[in-house]
Image (tube, rainbow, N blue to C red; front, side):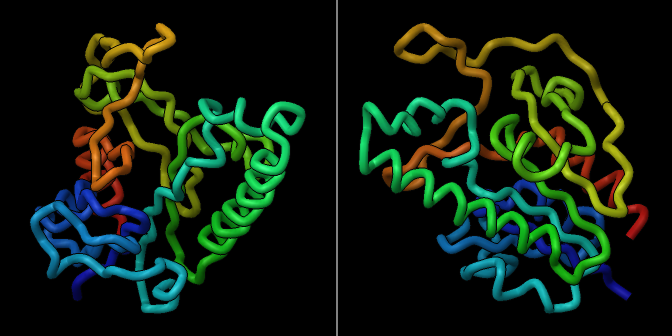
Length: 203
């Protein structure tokens, strides 16, 4: 019997494809079209509408727009006034979204997000990983909240390199790509392969 995996908030299909390579019935799910080359493995919809569809594992990447430490400056009410107040409201809505995902009726869950607001206002992460533990040379501290899943074991530790620099001179530690007029971060291939290999065996 095939095991079913839902990869939420993933239009890149990096994890979905890694799972499929191992015979696992994985589907990506996002409110926008996928660009991983397999629309037949993509559910274009709100992931919350599909949590009760009999999945064995949920791996989900909630948007970090309101959680990342990079955006903390935009919460300055004195400077940005109503825009900052609205941003606080949107962050609370985003946190409620995360809680619904974490409490989904799925036995095994991995919730992924960069270090930020969720570390102190949600739960302490199970582990914090780096792409360079899995063969990708970039550095990006990534939190994993795991339910009924073992922490990921490093597969190929390499020397990290800085991906680039922002306009203000700060180092840019994560890979970016553009989808339309938006810039979003994607899962590193080495991490995706580790998830599929290590967790796929215990489904």
